Image (cartoon, rainbow, N blue to C red; front, side):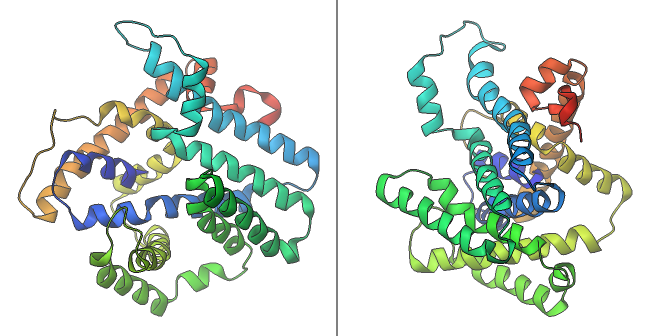
Length: 311
Protein backbone atom coordinates (compact mmCIF):
# COMPACT_ATOMS: atom_id res chain seq x y z
CA UNK A 1 0.00 0.00 0.00
CA UNK A 2 2.92 2.30 0.66
CA UNK A 3 4.22 1.54 -2.84
CA UNK A 4 0.81 2.46 -4.28
CA UNK A 5 0.96 5.90 -2.66
CA UNK A 6 4.53 6.34 -3.94
CA UNK A 7 3.43 5.36 -7.43
CA UNK A 8 0.56 7.83 -7.47
CA UNK A 9 2.77 10.63 -6.18
CA UNK A 10 5.21 9.91 -8.99
CA UNK A 11 2.54 11.15 -11.40
CA UNK A 12 3.70 14.62 -10.33
CA UNK A 13 6.94 14.06 -12.27
CA UNK A 14 7.40 13.92 -16.01
CA UNK A 15 10.51 11.81 -15.44
CA UNK A 16 10.37 8.06 -16.02
CA UNK A 17 12.12 6.52 -13.02
CA UNK A 18 13.11 2.87 -12.64
CA UNK A 19 11.52 2.52 -9.20
CA UNK A 20 8.26 3.84 -10.64
CA UNK A 21 8.33 1.22 -13.40
CA UNK A 22 8.94 -1.57 -10.88
CA UNK A 23 6.02 -0.49 -8.72
CA UNK A 24 3.71 0.00 -11.71
CA UNK A 25 4.47 -3.44 -13.14
CA UNK A 26 4.06 -5.40 -9.93
CA UNK A 27 2.11 -3.68 -7.13
CA UNK A 28 -1.37 -4.95 -8.04
CA UNK A 29 -0.01 -8.43 -8.76
CA UNK A 30 1.57 -8.48 -5.30
CA UNK A 31 -1.63 -7.12 -3.75
CA UNK A 32 -3.93 -9.76 -5.24
CA UNK A 33 -1.45 -12.56 -4.50
CA UNK A 34 -1.20 -11.53 -0.83
CA UNK A 35 -4.98 -11.00 -0.56
CA UNK A 36 -5.66 -14.52 -1.85
CA UNK A 37 -2.87 -16.06 0.23
CA UNK A 38 -4.24 -14.58 3.46
CA UNK A 39 -7.86 -15.21 2.48
CA UNK A 40 -7.17 -18.90 2.05
CA UNK A 41 -5.23 -19.06 5.35
CA UNK A 42 -7.88 -17.26 7.43
CA UNK A 43 -11.31 -18.00 5.89
CA UNK A 44 -13.11 -21.03 7.33
CA UNK A 45 -15.72 -21.91 4.70
CA UNK A 46 -17.11 -25.43 4.69
CA UNK A 47 -20.83 -24.89 4.07
CA UNK A 48 -23.04 -22.64 1.97
CA UNK A 49 -23.97 -20.73 5.14
CA UNK A 50 -20.29 -20.04 5.85
CA UNK A 51 -19.91 -18.80 2.30
CA UNK A 52 -22.87 -16.44 2.56
CA UNK A 53 -21.60 -15.00 5.86
CA UNK A 54 -18.15 -14.51 4.27
CA UNK A 55 -19.67 -12.69 1.29
CA UNK A 56 -21.84 -10.52 3.54
CA UNK A 57 -18.75 -9.50 5.48
CA UNK A 58 -16.88 -8.71 2.27
CA UNK A 59 -19.85 -6.72 0.99
CA UNK A 60 -19.59 -4.46 4.02
CA UNK A 61 -15.80 -4.41 3.99
CA UNK A 62 -15.34 -3.64 0.28
CA UNK A 63 -18.55 -2.41 -1.33
CA UNK A 64 -19.63 0.15 1.27
CA UNK A 65 -16.32 2.05 0.90
CA UNK A 66 -16.59 1.55 -2.88
CA UNK A 67 -19.92 3.37 -3.08
CA UNK A 68 -19.17 6.00 -0.44
CA UNK A 69 -15.77 7.03 -1.83
CA UNK A 70 -16.86 6.78 -5.45
CA UNK A 71 -20.23 8.54 -5.21
CA UNK A 72 -21.03 10.13 -1.85
CA UNK A 73 -17.77 11.80 -0.81
CA UNK A 74 -16.92 13.37 -4.23
CA UNK A 75 -20.42 14.85 -4.48
CA UNK A 76 -21.25 15.89 -0.92
CA UNK A 77 -18.19 16.08 1.37
CA UNK A 78 -16.48 19.50 1.59
CA UNK A 79 -18.06 20.63 -1.69
CA UNK A 80 -19.11 24.24 -2.39
CA UNK A 81 -22.22 22.90 -4.10
CA UNK A 82 -23.94 19.53 -3.94
CA UNK A 83 -24.58 17.60 -7.14
CA UNK A 84 -27.27 15.01 -7.83
CA UNK A 85 -26.24 11.39 -8.26
CA UNK A 86 -28.04 9.94 -11.28
CA UNK A 87 -28.68 6.33 -12.27
CA UNK A 88 -26.46 6.81 -15.33
CA UNK A 89 -23.64 7.98 -13.08
CA UNK A 90 -23.98 4.89 -10.88
CA UNK A 91 -23.91 2.61 -13.94
CA UNK A 92 -20.92 4.48 -15.34
CA UNK A 93 -19.02 4.12 -12.06
CA UNK A 94 -19.51 0.35 -12.20
CA UNK A 95 -18.23 0.30 -15.78
CA UNK A 96 -15.35 2.68 -15.07
CA UNK A 97 -14.70 2.55 -11.31
CA UNK A 98 -11.43 4.44 -11.63
CA UNK A 99 -9.64 5.16 -8.38
CA UNK A 100 -11.28 2.45 -6.25
CA UNK A 101 -11.73 -0.11 -9.02
CA UNK A 102 -9.55 -2.69 -7.30
CA UNK A 103 -12.18 -2.98 -4.52
CA UNK A 104 -14.74 -4.11 -7.09
CA UNK A 105 -12.27 -6.58 -8.61
CA UNK A 106 -11.39 -8.08 -5.24
CA UNK A 107 -15.08 -8.31 -4.34
CA UNK A 108 -15.74 -10.29 -7.52
CA UNK A 109 -12.85 -12.63 -6.69
CA UNK A 110 -14.48 -13.31 -3.31
CA UNK A 111 -17.45 -14.91 -5.11
CA UNK A 112 -15.13 -17.15 -7.13
CA UNK A 113 -13.30 -18.03 -3.92
CA UNK A 114 -16.54 -19.09 -2.20
CA UNK A 115 -17.63 -21.14 -5.22
CA UNK A 116 -14.39 -23.12 -5.12
CA UNK A 117 -14.57 -23.58 -1.34
CA UNK A 118 -18.11 -24.91 -1.16
CA UNK A 119 -17.60 -27.39 -4.02
CA UNK A 120 -15.30 -29.26 -1.61
CA UNK A 121 -13.30 -30.64 -4.54
CA UNK A 122 -9.99 -29.55 -3.08
CA UNK A 123 -7.93 -32.07 -5.09
CA UNK A 124 -9.34 -30.70 -8.33
CA UNK A 125 -9.61 -27.06 -7.31
CA UNK A 126 -7.05 -25.97 -9.88
CA UNK A 127 -9.34 -27.32 -12.63
CA UNK A 128 -12.25 -25.23 -11.29
CA UNK A 129 -10.05 -22.12 -11.22
CA UNK A 130 -8.93 -22.72 -14.81
CA UNK A 131 -12.54 -23.03 -15.95
CA UNK A 132 -13.49 -19.83 -14.12
CA UNK A 133 -10.54 -18.02 -15.67
CA UNK A 134 -11.52 -19.22 -19.16
CA UNK A 135 -15.09 -17.93 -18.64
CA UNK A 136 -13.90 -14.51 -17.44
CA UNK A 137 -11.29 -14.32 -20.21
CA UNK A 138 -13.96 -15.11 -22.82
CA UNK A 139 -16.26 -12.40 -21.45
CA UNK A 140 -13.41 -9.90 -21.65
CA UNK A 141 -12.43 -10.99 -25.17
CA UNK A 142 -15.98 -11.13 -26.53
CA UNK A 143 -17.70 -8.18 -24.85
CA UNK A 144 -14.92 -6.26 -23.09
CA UNK A 145 -16.16 -7.12 -19.58
CA UNK A 146 -13.92 -7.93 -16.60
CA UNK A 147 -10.69 -6.49 -18.01
CA UNK A 148 -8.96 -6.01 -14.64
CA UNK A 149 -10.45 -9.25 -13.32
CA UNK A 150 -8.93 -11.13 -16.26
CA UNK A 151 -5.58 -9.41 -15.87
CA UNK A 152 -5.04 -10.16 -12.19
CA UNK A 153 -6.96 -13.40 -11.63
CA UNK A 154 -3.86 -15.57 -12.29
CA UNK A 155 -2.08 -13.88 -9.35
CA UNK A 156 -5.13 -14.35 -7.13
CA UNK A 157 -5.29 -18.04 -8.07
CA UNK A 158 -1.54 -18.40 -7.47
CA UNK A 159 -1.95 -16.91 -3.98
CA UNK A 160 -4.71 -19.38 -3.07
CA UNK A 161 -2.96 -22.45 -4.44
CA UNK A 162 0.41 -21.41 -2.94
CA UNK A 163 -1.14 -21.22 0.52
CA UNK A 164 -2.08 -24.91 0.16
CA UNK A 165 1.57 -25.97 -0.25
CA UNK A 166 2.91 -27.09 3.11
CA UNK A 167 6.52 -26.06 2.49
CA UNK A 168 5.79 -22.90 0.47
CA UNK A 169 7.69 -20.69 2.96
CA UNK A 170 10.82 -22.79 2.55
CA UNK A 171 10.46 -22.63 -1.22
CA UNK A 172 10.08 -18.82 -1.24
CA UNK A 173 13.13 -18.41 1.01
CA UNK A 174 15.37 -20.47 -1.26
CA UNK A 175 18.53 -18.47 -1.90
CA UNK A 176 18.87 -19.53 -5.53
CA UNK A 177 15.27 -18.60 -6.30
CA UNK A 178 15.69 -15.23 -4.59
CA UNK A 179 18.86 -14.52 -6.58
CA UNK A 180 17.19 -15.46 -9.88
CA UNK A 181 14.23 -13.22 -8.97
CA UNK A 182 16.53 -10.29 -8.25
CA UNK A 183 18.41 -10.74 -11.52
CA UNK A 184 15.13 -11.07 -13.40
CA UNK A 185 13.95 -7.71 -12.06
CA UNK A 186 17.24 -5.89 -12.69
CA UNK A 187 17.89 -7.26 -16.18
CA UNK A 188 14.35 -7.26 -17.61
CA UNK A 189 12.79 -4.10 -16.16
CA UNK A 190 14.22 -1.78 -18.88
CA UNK A 191 12.32 -3.78 -21.53
CA UNK A 192 8.88 -3.04 -20.04
CA UNK A 193 6.73 -0.14 -21.22
CA UNK A 194 3.46 0.75 -19.54
CA UNK A 195 0.45 0.05 -21.74
CA UNK A 196 2.37 -1.81 -24.48
CA UNK A 197 0.82 -5.07 -25.69
CA UNK A 198 3.79 -6.72 -27.40
CA UNK A 199 4.83 -10.29 -26.58
CA UNK A 200 8.08 -9.01 -25.05
CA UNK A 201 6.21 -6.57 -22.82
CA UNK A 202 3.68 -9.16 -21.62
CA UNK A 203 6.41 -11.76 -21.01
CA UNK A 204 8.45 -9.22 -19.08
CA UNK A 205 5.51 -8.49 -16.78
CA UNK A 206 4.74 -12.20 -16.30
CA UNK A 207 8.32 -12.76 -15.13
CA UNK A 208 8.88 -9.62 -13.07
CA UNK A 209 5.61 -9.75 -11.10
CA UNK A 210 6.27 -13.22 -9.52
CA UNK A 211 9.89 -12.22 -8.94
CA UNK A 212 8.69 -9.14 -7.03
CA UNK A 213 6.35 -11.31 -4.95
CA UNK A 214 9.32 -13.49 -3.94
CA UNK A 215 11.54 -10.50 -3.11
CA UNK A 216 8.71 -8.85 -1.14
CA UNK A 217 8.14 -12.01 0.89
CA UNK A 218 11.82 -12.28 1.80
CA UNK A 219 12.07 -8.60 2.72
CA UNK A 220 9.04 -8.90 5.03
CA UNK A 221 10.12 -12.14 6.71
CA UNK A 222 13.90 -11.95 6.90
CA UNK A 223 14.87 -8.29 7.20
CA UNK A 224 14.89 -6.57 10.58
CA UNK A 225 15.07 -2.80 10.26
CA UNK A 226 14.63 0.05 12.68
CA UNK A 227 11.79 -0.81 15.09
CA UNK A 228 9.92 2.40 14.31
CA UNK A 229 10.12 1.70 10.58
CA UNK A 230 8.91 -1.85 11.21
CA UNK A 231 5.93 -0.48 13.13
CA UNK A 232 5.23 1.96 10.30
CA UNK A 233 5.21 -0.83 7.69
CA UNK A 234 2.89 -2.93 9.87
CA UNK A 235 0.61 0.09 10.26
CA UNK A 236 0.43 0.49 6.46
CA UNK A 237 -0.62 -3.14 6.20
CA UNK A 238 -3.18 -3.00 9.00
CA UNK A 239 -4.85 0.13 7.63
CA UNK A 240 -4.26 -0.56 3.94
CA UNK A 241 -7.86 -0.07 2.85
CA UNK A 242 -8.20 3.19 4.80
CA UNK A 243 -4.96 4.49 3.30
CA UNK A 244 -5.99 3.58 -0.21
CA UNK A 245 -9.44 5.18 -0.28
CA UNK A 246 -8.29 8.29 1.62
CA UNK A 247 -4.90 9.08 0.08
CA UNK A 248 -6.29 10.46 -3.19
CA UNK A 249 -7.23 13.65 -1.35
CA UNK A 250 -3.57 14.47 -0.61
CA UNK A 251 -1.85 13.57 -3.89
CA UNK A 252 -1.97 16.84 -5.79
CA UNK A 253 1.22 18.83 -5.26
CA UNK A 254 1.32 21.20 -8.22
CA UNK A 255 -1.02 22.22 -11.03
CA UNK A 256 1.25 20.74 -13.69
CA UNK A 257 3.80 17.95 -13.82
CA UNK A 258 7.38 19.09 -13.38
CA UNK A 259 10.77 17.70 -14.34
CA UNK A 260 13.61 17.19 -11.88
CA UNK A 261 17.12 15.86 -12.35
CA UNK A 262 17.05 12.25 -13.58
CA UNK A 263 18.42 10.80 -10.35
CA UNK A 264 16.55 7.96 -8.65
CA UNK A 265 17.62 8.89 -5.11
CA UNK A 266 16.89 12.61 -5.43
CA UNK A 267 13.45 11.76 -6.78
CA UNK A 268 12.66 8.91 -4.41
CA UNK A 269 13.56 10.48 -1.05
CA UNK A 270 11.04 13.38 -1.10
CA UNK A 271 8.36 11.16 -2.62
CA UNK A 272 8.94 8.49 0.04
CA UNK A 273 8.84 11.03 2.87
CA UNK A 274 5.65 12.65 1.57
CA UNK A 275 4.06 9.24 0.95
CA UNK A 276 4.85 8.29 4.56
CA UNK A 277 3.28 11.53 5.77
CA UNK A 278 0.16 10.80 3.70
CA UNK A 279 -0.08 7.30 5.22
CA UNK A 280 0.14 8.74 8.74
CA UNK A 281 -2.55 11.32 7.90
CA UNK A 282 -4.85 8.65 6.45
CA UNK A 283 -4.44 6.43 9.51
CA UNK A 284 -5.11 9.41 11.80
CA UNK A 285 -8.33 10.17 9.91
CA UNK A 286 -9.32 6.49 10.13
CA UNK A 287 -8.77 6.45 13.91
CA UNK A 288 -10.81 9.63 14.36
CA UNK A 289 -13.62 8.19 12.22
CA UNK A 290 -13.50 4.95 14.23
CA UNK A 291 -14.95 6.95 17.15
CA UNK A 292 -18.17 7.03 15.09
CA UNK A 293 -18.94 3.33 14.42
CA UNK A 294 -21.66 3.89 11.82
CA UNK A 295 -19.53 6.34 9.80
CA UNK A 296 -16.56 4.01 10.18
CA UNK A 297 -18.66 1.19 8.75
CA UNK A 298 -19.75 3.29 5.76
CA UNK A 299 -16.38 4.86 4.94
CA UNK A 300 -13.97 2.06 5.83
CA UNK A 301 -16.08 -1.10 5.87
CA UNK A 302 -15.75 -1.85 9.58
CA UNK A 303 -18.02 -4.90 9.77
CA UNK A 304 -17.53 -5.29 13.54
CA UNK A 305 -20.57 -3.06 13.95
CA UNK A 306 -22.43 -6.31 13.19
CA UNK A 307 -21.64 -8.41 16.25
CA UNK A 308 -22.18 -11.78 14.56
CA UNK A 309 -19.37 -10.99 12.07
CA UNK A 310 -16.66 -10.27 14.63
CA UNK A 311 -15.18 -13.74 14.55
